[in-house]
Image (cartoon, rainbow, N blue to C red; front, side, top):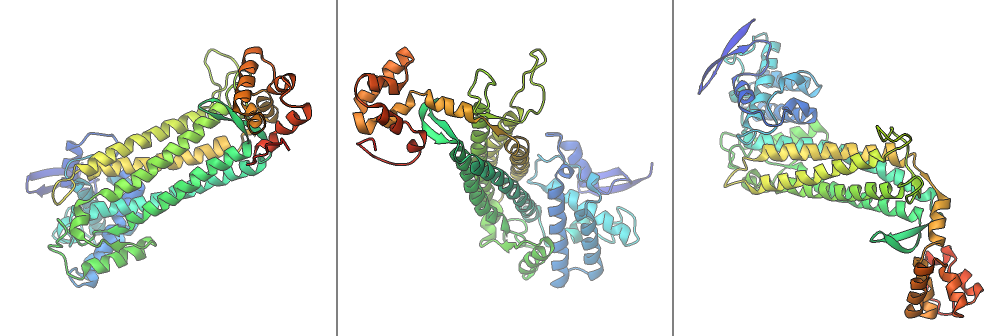
Length: 469
């Protein structure tokens, strides 16, 4: 087995030469065994880091502090990683001590060794190109790590927004299809007044539209970076013009605009931007979970539940009960949403924990944030494609629940008053008679008035007619 010796200020290690990462990554792999999820398991994060490193190399070349051959070699190595090569070399655990230093060095070492080979040298021959002196030139973990999180989050939030728009479109189709289908409205799981199934799906669509707007606004926080802040925001060991150039280069590389933060010292220690994004994700998760659960309840049955809709049959529902089919898609979406809600607490606590000039708990933020975005994107697409798209309405069951409801006695209030209506409702519940028949028996309303007042369509829009007309 071919090996090479590498050293850091702690000491020297023998590294298997098949690895493009080096001594500092090796120590991190040995030290951190928290999640079982590595840097490489988040390819969009690896891509963002490579984009940052390429932008830094090109900026350093432009401001005249990095040799052109070295800068170009780093940029070309970064391009290969951006294209998806060497994904198995990004091996540090996502949750780690050190504010992300191990992740930054994993990127520095892999990019450097890929570049060295392209220059005709061997891995580890750092006298020709060094992970710290060249690939990390003008940088610190404290600006590259949070900036890479933001670049990665911006890209993934864009994917999430596309998934949300897809779900909204499917909900809009159902709202249109069922706009005239009468069903019973419910409050606190009790009969209320009639609505339409179209109204129900339109409300769901409005939830998602609102969250799209909130997440789009929150995504903008991800476009303000602290590249050029270096250690604590003062820009030590960084060329004065670098911070302007590196954001321009990054914008060109990524294709989305990234701008320098107004205050680099504040931006280096304050992680509230991530809290803003996570809060918007949590709100979307709460709304999505509510939609999934309402669908689950409307689907309940098939004989002894509400049975107002029928969700697609996805798999057998029981190992003992033949013919049982469970609403598994709605259930899994709810579980996914709870994960997002829990991650928001983690992100909030990690953000609060930052002391003085740096937040050392950013790896916990990155892990929670990336998981939330990914899970929520998957949940949106899953609900759209495996539940909403192919569900079917049950108009007979919907209408039957309206006509058999005591709640429709509310329509009598403007004509016979609340007390009379309440008395009718009480008798209807006790005897099983319809509210219309009771009103006629008591001489409070004629059959014609009852039919007009209880016409389901007349109860779907605002009106206040004390004559019953």
